[in-house]
Length: 579
Image (tube, rainbow, N blue to C red; front, side, top):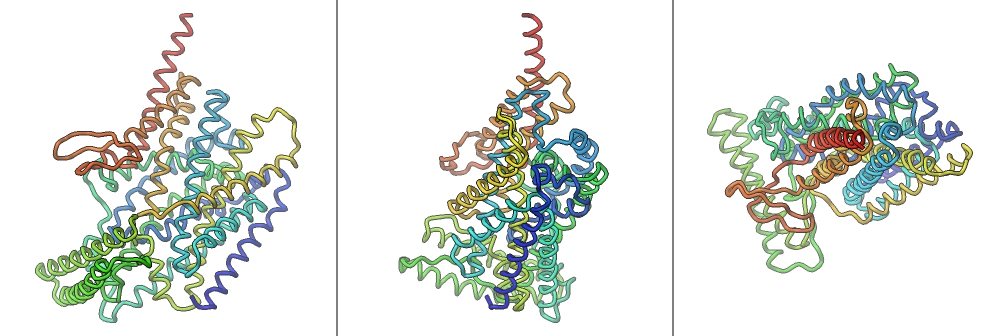
């Protein structure tokens, strides 16, 4: 990377630290530190929510997902507007009326301290684990991008976010998020513009869409109902609705945003901003990945965007790699020629020849990936390196630094929010609630900063220990799906099931988490109809596939918690009345 790009990146990181820490003076007590004294404008909260959502995982992983597959991933966001409207009517006014610090404080009055602590513990565990992934995932990519060691990259991202969050509190987090969102949007829009302008002069935008459509890359909707399929319209409208309701309505990192609002109206407006903007933004990012695929039909693309060649490699594997490279170059030229033929004469024969040439080229890419996996004895995938490769090799000097700053911004805007939320829950739901000694506001403020530092260091160490993943955008949603549905079930019992009590709610929550674990590890053989439970440390039997995909774990967890919680509450009351 050119020194100009390095200078831009360093200047951005320095400004972020300054901007985040300068708001520390507004945090004279824990209400200022955690809730900005409930004084944030709605547009800042809304942009902060979007910045947290548009993490480096979205920036890098979603574009790669569209490049490798298609645009069906956008379906999981179809539920966002419905979720936002429902939350504006239900949980937002509920939380605003109570004026609490934590989303889980409200559980104690109705269901008891154990339910409050267990629910908040699930949040701490799930978001703590997710935070390690949020730091690790972009660090692996950025380390290769910058030709920089991995460990220092992780430390730069983790420590930078920890420092300004620890000093500036939620006010610093929201103000930096707004600027970071601006940098991210610039990076995405400029990249799209550069792809369009870098296509051959005789290839128009409509030609690009035609080629992408011929390959099925523009497929965004799948109407088939299948719970074993990750992305279809039913997954997006039904299963993802539970995920979004739980994430925006019960996850402290999001609830904390609208708890900082001046009024209920402002809190609702911040969520509605996300409702209006989320789907278009995700659609645009996916379309960017598709256009990147079209760009590399005409421009030189490597056999793999993530090459790993250890020092000691068998000669047979070296020869196999050379053969695959030769086959790939020939296949690349054949596909390029087929694309030209199709644009000149748009008929069925040319379309079929183009699709076959594309399939053959991707078969060679798959073989190269298998070769690298044999060499490294580990899972290797280049999905998360496609967009960064384009940035470094195609974007002009100066703009590269800004776009990489956008990736850093995306990572930081997610990390700071999670850190502040983790600290809030730990201090409010655990430390202050269980501490029997009277402490001053100054004491709790110091403790809050210390806990922020603790979570930041813990997440950074976890990131150093984590390995690469095939699709970082999927992994984060999978981690969330393990917990979100069950937590949502507790709040449904709280608001709408009058007969629910503490015994039923806590037992239902445990049953919900257990059911999610069981069904997540359930596999079936489509040919024999045999089902098998597979432990996490065991190999999946040959011929077996997932019975239920991860997004459907959300309504499953919610349903089990509500039904078990209601039934056990009724039984418990009958037992007590007969005593």
